[in-house]
Length: 216
Image (tube, rainbow, N blue to C red; front, side):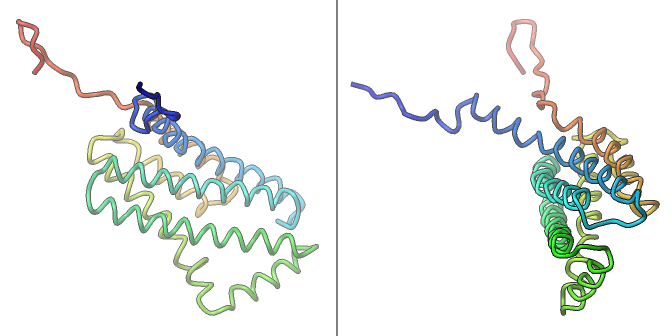
């Protein structure tokens, strides 16, 4: 007497499709959460100072969520590029995301422990003065995220797995904070346009048929 498995096989077609859709959602989640962060940041600055408060904390938590989604995005981009260089680049970009995550985590804690901006600034300086914290979380580490992301997208485009204009939109997104941090929402929208193409299911290569109907 045969027994039916209690759980569906992990390699069954519906399960694989479900996992694929979940991974691809990261391409939407990442830019949307960056957009949320950028909007909260703009609102937080209306009084002339940023933090502490709900807008500061909520915005930073949104960006931290975006960084987790970016880790998934980098893994997918590495698979699309399919090269050793892409693997190295994905590791570098993910390390940069981890550094940014640490920086934003510090900012959240500093915001929660202080009642005014002056207290936050003083505590932040104390944290940055700790040996290794400055280069890791502020001066060097975060740039690995930005550079790695762009290089990964370029490799995917060169592999023919992304539109030719994709790296230019990603570069524009990455440039926005350096022009004016209030433009972060604009950059997030550009990134959303860039990443939208990666959420669509990949179509198999067309199969040509001979006159007798045989696939080639």
